[in-house]
Image (cartoon, rainbow, N blue to C red; front, side, top):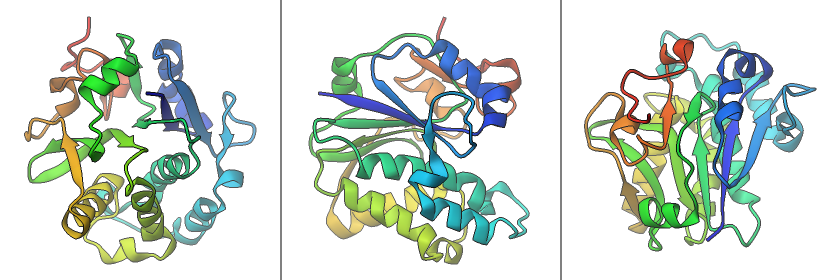
Length: 233
């Protein structure tokens, strides 16, 4: 197996919290960072140059008013376009792609064998943290790049934005959209996906097999750089 890790942030978010991501990153996988600022805070992929569809989407929709993060399509578009671009352009020898939020702090290193044991299934397209009827926790996602439907899934996700079809759905944040398209592929193509969540709401990542490995300091947890639910020492 060969795996890569993908994340995204701009310079402001790097200064706020993503610097901890880089200070603690101890996984042996190649890290790809997408950053829309020029120059970026660290060496990174020039996001708008690499993915002009994202720039067009942001410029077209940044003035839309919304009452909740659930309808903030622009805010979460960066993550979606980073992950999908990385999926569609991954080298042929890459087996798996991990998409992980930049507000993550790493504790224990993992390797390809750990991924194969805990995340990867040959006949599954993706691995996610399910929370029952609530939308999934998408601070961590894994894609099997050898699955025959993975690239099609990535293109379908991009098309939700490019075609504005996402605005016909009840919510526009990325967790809702990842789930929407995942379920669609499960129903249309009988695609299998691997749920490593416990079906309960809250900080599902901390309770999962990922809990001892790294901490997702989402929300107000960013200020302290550690979650109260964190299981890692």
